[in-house]
Image (cartoon, rainbow, N blue to C red):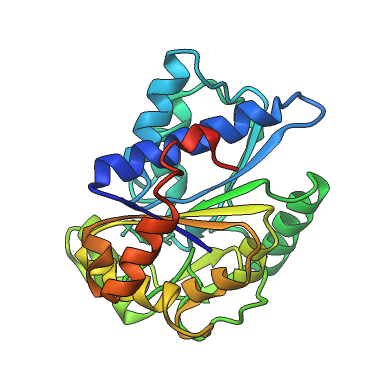
Length: 269
Ligand code: GLP
C-alpha cells in the first residue's frame, strides 16, 4: 500500500484529481474499451471532483469514454431527494463534465428486489471487465463504501444496515437529525473494491486519524474495513496532515521518505 501525505485538503484533492486524469489519459479509452471508474460520495471527494471538473473544462481530460459505477446508495429515500447519492453525483460532478448519462451507474436504493439489483450491478461491472480505478473515502469507523465494521472482507454488492456511528456522522447532511438518516443502504462489498485493478482512497481531517491508523498500521480486520486495502496489489491512500495525527512518528516519516520522489501524480502508476 502507498500512503501519499499532502499538507492540506486542497493538495490532497489536487493530487487525487491529477492522478485520476492521468490514468484516464494513459488508458486512452474508446467507446469499445472505456475506462471504468468507481466513484464515491461524501465530503472527502468533493475537492477532487471540483478539480476534475476544472481539468475537464480546460480540455485536459475527457469523460466521454469513461463508465462510472458508484459505491453505494441509501435505501428508502427518493432518487431526487437532495441527499440521495444519485442527486449528489449529478449535482457535484456528472452535470458538470462531458460524461454520457448512459455511462453512469448508480445502485437503485428503491429497487423492488434489492438482492437482484445488487446481482445486476456486480454482473454489469464484470461485463465491463471490472473497475479500472476505484476511488473512495472512509468513514470515521474505518468503513469503505458502506462496509461497516464486521463486514466480510470478501463481500460483494448487497444491502447493509448502517451503524449508529455512521448515522450520527451522516446526520450533518440531514438537518442534524438522526431520525431522518436512512438506516440501510445498498453498497459494493469490500471484495468488489479489492477486485478493482487499482484503488485510491482520500482520507482527510482529524476525525479520520483513527481510521487511517487502523488502515495503515493495524492488522487486516473486518472491524476496520479500510485495512483490507493492505491485501490489494495497487492501493494508494492520499491523506492530509490532519488525518496522519494518530500514526506513529516513524510510520509518518517512513512514508514521507519513501514517497519523496513521487510528488507528481501525473507520473505515478
Ligand atoms: C459515507 C459513504 C462513504 C464515505 C463516508 C465518509 O458513509 N458511504 O463512502 O466514505 O460517508 O464521508 P465523508 O467523506 O463525508 O467523511
